[in-house]
Image (cartoon, rainbow, N blue to C red):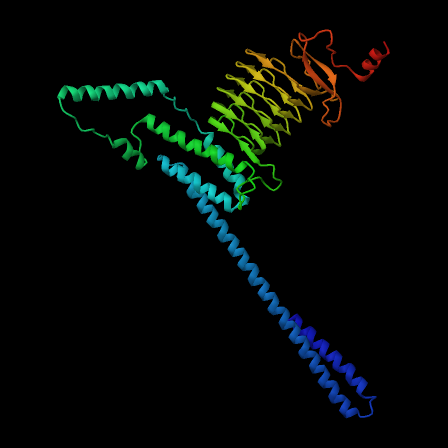
Length: 413
């Protein structure tokens, strides 16, 4: 309506102006006809412009509505798939739970915006109460096999004829059907499901190799990985080597069998408060770019921290190392907390570097028998550094970490 009024006013104004000019022409009658024709042409042009604008706007609105409908349909489909996969994880049949895990993985691979949500669900599944199965000793299994074979052979000889081998297909058929015969079978099935969830997490937090055409790394927008919340989780044969994680919470988690973190990068706060490591633990060449908190953790097996770099605070208060521990070539860039740490086995601190120009860099409760000698790492590190040395190695040459003013006084002496 407004456009029509505007066009009418424009046509009338143009016609009035042109008619005014026509009165001064040599042939006023012809000039008036030309003026009316020009005004009508102008009006037609304006109408055409309005029609084109309205058509374009209608097309734009239609495309916008279509995009919204497609987005809504996609979100609805994603929600349905996510809900279905989550329901599969609640199944009492292990194959169904495995299908739910792989459905979630596929959903995350095709919908990057939902990857953190899917990782959160996988972590929540691993946080569920769980008791890992007791692995049967190899010697025990071998002994049972030999005993069974001897029993069959003896019975065959006793009967005086070869006896047919009877196969018990019940367990195999039950497993194929997703059923379990007893609690032990259920435990073993759940164990496999949880191992699969762990592998999926690690696979998508580990940067791709150069030979992969489609990226399977869920590194987030900045490439630093996603958040992990595995507080209180029971983890078995954990492998996070060379993965990238933004923030990680392993508070009060239990790591059974080997826990491997070698070469990983943690870009946010990482908490291992109260964690129980029951076997070999490897943090070799790990980079902690945020605070690393191990307060109250217990390492029941050997622990390896060789080459680890703590770029922020490293807190080991009240930690117990029941096995051997090695920090060879580790670097502490900020503050070290070692209050109440206890070493029950051998502790190796070869070539451990500590930055000294940070306020309160050294915990007041320092390691007994160890001191810091001012030295240069020689690898382009900025700041003032010290090398951790044993007081028993060469007491005469050991120089405790001192301020620059103290060093000058010693030089003057």
